[in-house]
Amino acid sequence: MFDNSDPAMQRAYESARAAFRYFWREVARDRRRIVPALDLACVKAPFSDVGGSDTEHMWLSDIDFDGRTVSGTLVNSPNRLRTVAAGDAVSVPLEQISDWMYAISGAAFGGYTINLMRSRMDARERREHDAAWGLDFGDPLQIRTATESEHATFNENLAASLRDHLAQEPAALSETDGNGWTLLHQEAAAGGAATVAVLLEAGADAGAVTDLGLTPLQLARALGWDEVAALLERA
Image 1 (spheres, rainbow, N blue to C red):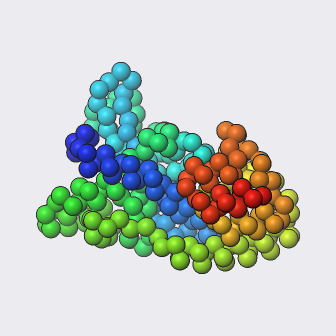
Image 2 (cartoon, rainbow, N blue to C red):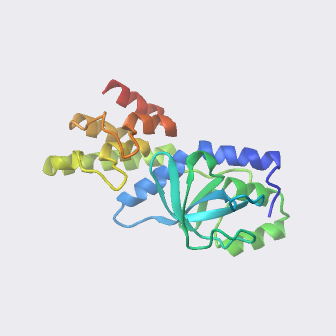
């Protein structure tokens, strides 16, 4: 439990929203791995009953993102709310999420609100909190995100395999997923400059739109992938 009006908590919400692209990059990349690396990937968002004054911030798993809305399965059981329950399929606009977190090999990344609360605990409380989660959150004043060098290596390797795949399956350029996303949309949202370059070289349609009418460039801009946006602007 925490004071939702706390200025520091509000800043934690804003920081999590601004950095959502790093969360989505990991989720998108994990979907391309033969052996998934993520132990968990969750987003926190506020929920209220219609007409009610109570707001509860709860975690979602099985995350999807259509360019505007984050959707998933509610993990928590509400304390006071009556219109949602654990296990419900829910969705919230991206600009309303309050936190995100993923874990790899027991190490937690993100968790802006969690680490704010951890920073206000004494050493014993923090140990008990971390043990209850079963995760290593590290220094509460240092939010973990994957390094750019790690992703640069992954993207270069993925670009090479993608080039080979497209040579054998050129129709993959125009195939779409359940949200109407092409491979170019997916890579633009994941911040994959190397893979976006390969797709454009292979003739991917930079003007293709999703079911919500979003182009790859709009996705890259919305998530703050400047290098990818620059490639798409020149396409």
